[in-house]
Image: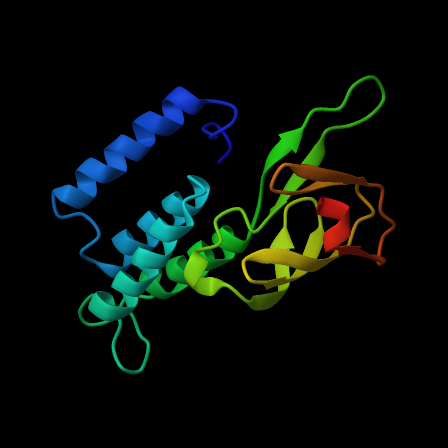
Length: 184
């Protein structure tokens, strides 16, 4: 959901973070599905190191050699949820930017909002964002080097990386390529 965000409701986000700390200190995250939730929450808190630590814990404690989640005998939640958490660390699109006048609300696409330091260089292709967007991203030394925003519906959006934001008017079926200089 989008009811609690770091920027929009910081007090509620802090309360949620404290709740997760308490649950982990009290034995939470011992199953794959529970650990997957923790990965996703750390991504929403924009805490890349928490994402990294919990992805490692999911793989070490809840994943069999064949990569199935091992909540006996098998439970797919840890697999799907872990993958979703990794995607959430790389791209988030749950927030809206309010429109004014005749301008409609636009989806806010955040690039690399919770990138762990250990994932310093990489790329991802085909990440889906709300509003009918598909996103490819590349990064090096923890910094965005390029992004391609593919519009499936021709909607407008705002793409943010760090503190920099780019407003895009898109055309259905067209790509917009953004280099690192757009976010400097």
